[in-house]
Image (cartoon, rainbow, N blue to C red; front, side, top):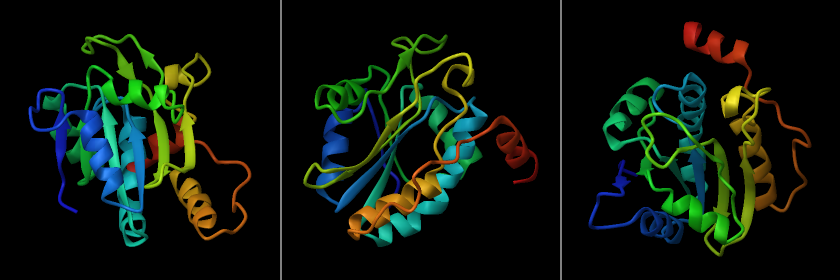
Amino acid sequence: MPSATTTAADNSESPVQHYERALTDHAFLWVVYYRGHWCPFCTAYLKTLQSLRPSIESAGGAVLIVTAEPAEHLPATRKTSGYTGDAIVDPEHQLATVLKQRGLLDVAITKRGGYEHGVAQPGVLVLKKDGGVLFDWAIHPGVMNLGGAKDRLDLKQIWENVQAKMDGKPMVHRKYATQTISGTVWGKMFG
């Protein structure tokens, strides 16, 4: 799937319309919220997501990243993470608001300079075309997780559990590994 980006400034499609189109066009949709190009934890997470894209897409799914960061920073995110897929830039949190209203995902929004309406914190939603939730998780920012930076659930393990669920099999992982500072630093230096 060629990369596409929707920003709040696009007149052709709102972030919510972009999300709904992507969901309608695929058997399931994998949505990942990230903070911004400046976040090494986000970069590492998106690298992992990019590595999973072929498997997700071969299973009939699509991947979509969402950020509240200004659109001018998306090329830097793509360059540092290697992510080449679909993206939504949603500085006003239109999609996060709708997902919360529908009871699908409650993305935390916190204050940060450079984000007029706040930064969207990490979250993952995997949703079937029919609206069935295969997986949902959103971080709760706090001191212990560096304001939402670390302790993200392992995307590979999430994908293994989603695949099992789609196949009607038991979960592979009852507990998820989390992203750590040392793992992120190691990946940045050697990865």
